[in-house]
Image (cartoon, rainbow, N blue to C red):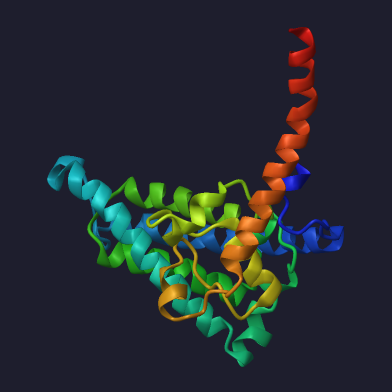
Amino acid sequence: FWYTKIQQRYPQNKYVFLEIRYSIYTFLILSAFIAFVIWANKNGLTMAYSPIDKYGYGYYFLSFLIMIVIHDTYFYWTHRLLHWKPLFKFAHKTHHKSTNPTPFAAYSFHPFEAVIEMGIMLVLVFTIPHHVSVISVFGVYSLVINVAGHAGFEFLPKWFVRHKIFKWHNTSTHHNLHHTHFKSNFGLYFTFWDKVMKTEHPKYEEEFEKLADIRNQANELVDEPALAQQKAAH
């Protein structure tokens, strides 16, 4: 398992505890946003609808994709804004204390940044017609991608970053480079904005493939004893 680690060293416990503490603050703020959205739904103030048949299953899935694209754009540009020196010192520096992030870093935000991050929820529910369940699916997907981006491990195959379609999707390596270099790789779900705005780290693909080679070599070493035993048995 160690050979999938992006940074071979492990973070100090004090930084892990810091990530957990700020994540608790973030989830308290998230709870307040969720409570407000539930209240707004009950009072008919959002664009939520039911049943699914009102717009059909095609739109159900399309609305989810629209949310992902909007959120990726929102995240990229607010993230760039948070790297503006005054805002970085005031708020975003908290998140970047995790130079070797763990999954707990995914929501380790200063409260000010947490409010900005959760603001996407309001943008979506008040502007995009959506079935009541889609916002929950979106939330789970966002959580999974965010945690994966901060996992500190890379499991995706070597060809991923060269594939004409998959190269546009983010990876754990992509975001890990942001935590080590700060001035590149600002995207969340996709690499689109980083590529268009030329903010993608120039050695991203090289680093990704280097990690994949290490993983493949380690797998071969692990498999060698088993292959030797099989040959001996025959």
